[in-house]
Length: 297
Image 1 (cartoon, helix red, strand yellow):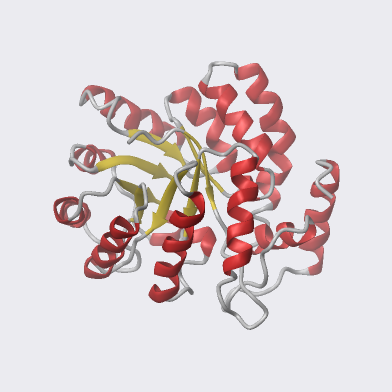
Image 2 (cartoon, rainbow, N blue to C red):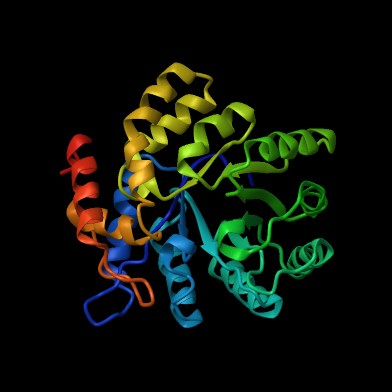
């Protein structure tokens, strides 16, 4: 399976009584598909994976696969700081019919590089579903190094890395490593930072798993398509149209600004779960201004 284009790291909408809003999730899935994205990710970091239960996570995988119904790629967030728990979630994603499982590098316990390799090797050897490594050192405290990434990329079912380390030189090193290993057709590097997607594609990345696309899926997915087609002038125009949105969605902890933005434009979102808290008033006004400038409200 090739990971290319724009995959949306979807928020998880909650009802007023703090249940996963199944109807709202299905509405958002259809809205995003109708606006041109190539994939949808449920239960990732932006989906508040840290505060949803495993029962809720499995339910969301089922909703995702059912509602997408093969129209775009369905990606299941399935990581944990426990390899045993991650395996259970990856197996469920496979049985649910997801196209791939996104597996974050184990957080908090800070595994050694060879521990990271063994984590992904065990998942690879125990399942058949395509696996996407998610490297986000700002959240996990662990940064998968280039050599270890190269080893993991050679595992049969590992198809991509969502790279959220903002070090652009590391991106070049990763692309070079994949080229040296002859894996360009089997393994893709995907941006995990909306604001770095355009330069990452210019270096060899194949797309993005995007927060911004929750709010403006049409422009974000078009920017990526133009860049992948080599139309960097057109992609650059859209990059700068979206740049303020790319920044303001991280004015406070993700996904709090994204959920506020979706509420402003009339999409299902609901509250965030504690310990996340509602936005400060000044942040709300910053978001409102950006959305007005983009004519989204």
